[in-house]
Length: 337
Image (cartoon, rainbow, N blue to C red):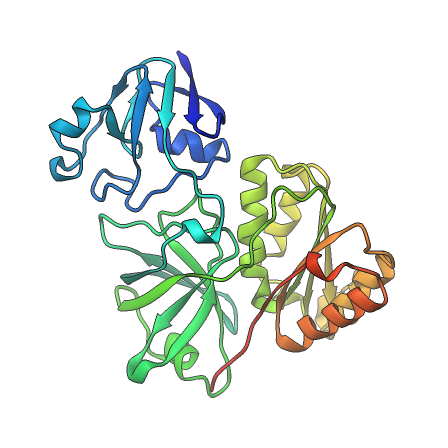
């Protein structure tokens, strides 16, 4: 049986059933409620049931007292609906609503996506989850106060693990460790989420996404989030790399064509290898965008990659293609050795 849930004071509405946790149903409907653990252990998702009844689920008693339950409170990450509901809760509307946290994490899985690209899956402690916006990044906290930043490659609805795409940098202290000495079950510390690279869902303009190399990681998160929420603006992804093997999730990007209405994927190689048998687009990826879309005045652009690509795209898109500067959103990857 399905129930209707109305959030106050926003008046946002979604449907759920008696099996789906309220937080999961809200997130699936595109409404970002606050949370920290998703298993009744932290209290971050606590809100008030204004009308209707819920099954409170399993939770730690210290995080929801009997007195609080008598006042109408519940933990939405574990509670389920028993009727139509009116819920009073805060909604996460942007960066200001998301707490930056410092957490330990365990390396759950390592997988080479390309000879110089490693996928890391990170597992948080049992009672922790990281709330973030698709496209944001985390900072690993290293010795002597050093930090290394990496974009989160998974969307917020798929947050069992934090997934990163790490490119090996010649002479890189941290990436050298990842490729040379790191092993599964190693413990790391990070701070996050950080960054203002996220989809402006209320802007009604066609979207161009521009990825260079592992700049694909945050754009992957944004596109998977767009698919999850049923985003309706058309999106065109241009992914630039040197050779075909550097398009390390080419098949995944191709699969989005059928999953998101209005989605187009244009891979671009700057230096195709002899064995690539490449008959697709070649050259600098931002120049391919300009050839296809000489007038960007009605678009919004999300660009992620090396500083040279970002700087060139910003300069050329705004000057030659008339893209309004306020609709150019970028995450520039810089490297430390």
